[in-house]
Amino acid sequence: MSNNMKVNLRVWRQKNTSDSGHFEEYTVETNPDMSFLEMFDVLNENLITDGKEPVAFDHDCREGICGMCSMVINGRPHGPKGGITTCQLHMRSFSDGDTIVVEPWRANSFPVIKDLSVNRSAFDRIIASGGFVSVNTGNAVDANSILIPKETADEAFEAATCIGCGACVSACKNASAMLFVGAKVTQLSMLPQGQAERHHRVVAMVNQMDAEGFGACTNTGACAAECPKEIPLSVIATMNREYIKAKLQGY
View: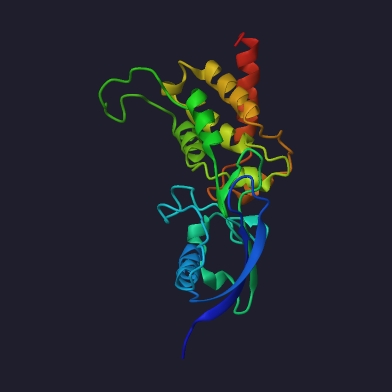
């Protein structure tokens, strides 16, 4: 007896950034143990076999690490499960005969390239503005040569787990990137290696975030609720404190 299931898809199709876009409907026979992206692979195989244009979507590692698999599934970034990316979502999360609506990230700062693929180079420019350590660290040293309290290391590591997928932007009604920027600022501001450029970094990254057209924080917490790495809202408070301190220092 087959375990296969059929789902009805309403998928956003858009030829390019200037196209207005529209939904198209498909029916796909899949297996409950397939990932959501594997189900899309089946859809695209069917479309190619029928001589039609496959659906463009982003993917890379398919292990929940790269952050590429940006899909809004039934109104939620990365789908109905918490703490996972789209590639970690399995079809057993849905029922036979379900209708699933799939859209790209919706934000002016993330223009659609094609179908479900969006341009997230705004995040790259924010990182390039200050999300790095430029001091000469020399050769690799013993891990214990720079003593860092465990609580500090844990908090920095928690912030560093951000994969820059953009789910926070997609979930926010203002398309704010403050959870993303807050995570990067928090990570580096807490470690000794990040102190040399601490004040310059936060001002540069916040200014670049504003220049990219991201909105202000709504304080609703939708970003943290939909974050696949469960980055806490506290990183936004940390970023705000770091920014105020930097401005008071004249940066």
